[in-house]
Image (spheres, rainbow, N blue to C red):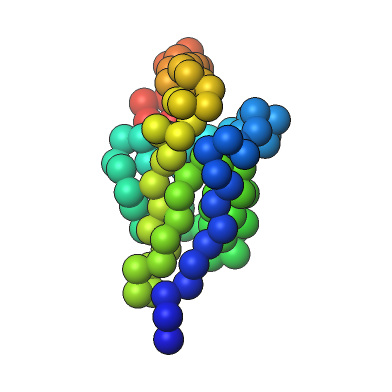
Length: 113
């Protein structure tokens, strides 16, 4: 059986409203933060306590918006940020969002948001 393939928008198809919507949900934003820190990761490691259907939904939304790249590796669903594509399309956006996320966590006194 051939590995599963996923559709990803081309860099020039990544639209700011979709990216901002994808990043507006706290769980997805936390997934993006974890990917920024860890690099490519099995999607299950981004929320081991969550139902698989929830992870699939949020991973799909991030992929369809152009924020992440997803590939199958055996039974794993490997996911990584499309940092270069996002930087080319919207310079500074990802860094600004992640910095703002960390600042908000610090303001709330959260050690690991």
